[in-house]
Length: 389
Image (cartoon, rainbow, N blue to C red; front, side, top):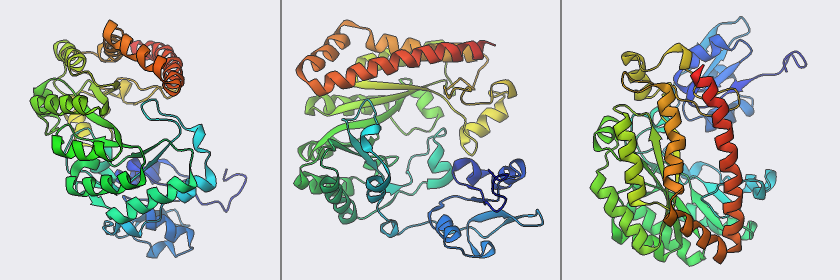
């Protein structure tokens, strides 16, 4: 690109450059600048033509080739100062082109806040960009955006709040829910498996359809190891409450966390079948640079140069971690084992078929998910060959 346009300036944002601005600039010689940490106003000042030397939070390469790191930018607390994203969706995107199996189609996803109080060792954003203070937009600001979006996108069937943990501030979450209830919209969000039943009742009464819940593991010691701050019995009670109230759960699990073994993998699979979330997602433990898990993996020899990449050339997630009692290959293989053990059982199959027969919309979603799942397994077999090599 620079060969075509020598005056072009190239910048990067995101977690990787936030934790390694100097290394990113040294490695990528065509990169002119990176915006560290929260980049919103840093990038705006670049776009507005401010002198780079005056922009807080910016690291850049001078014309002489020197690398300069400006003063850090203060963390943003007035989240209402950020513009709404939905008018940009309307201007630039065809929302029907975007699909997530566990959400109704078409959907819109937004953030109502940043940061997460939890200290999970593997989680990328709080440890690199967002921080561990949940900084939120006002209730009024959030409800106003959804009200605007309802008019701008009459075809939308569901709104999803992608905050790391929307339920971290329960009084605020309940206030937003009541505002959404007045609008008559269907909504979903990320949640921790400890929301009390009374709050769940408020959410359900005001349009909540689904919670995306990070269970991670069914083994209590592994949850301690990753500082999840979750008790198995609390998660079980929460899940039962959701089932009783008719709130769907998309449960996420991770294979290969510290302390994992063949036994804990079997324990997690059986636990997932027992608590029976509506749908699941199974990932491989990923030691992202900047996280405590990455530091652990380097110090303990769980990560080696041969398997340091997190995805293969086709973008399929691979198993970067290994332990003395558990290889890369076994961690990788058990993702498919998990999916099959969860979905390929009579009660689950009957439930899925029943949904498809009673809802044309669900029929379309499930058929599309089936095609994607088949492609996923096909791609993983190719990735498995890479891991074995």
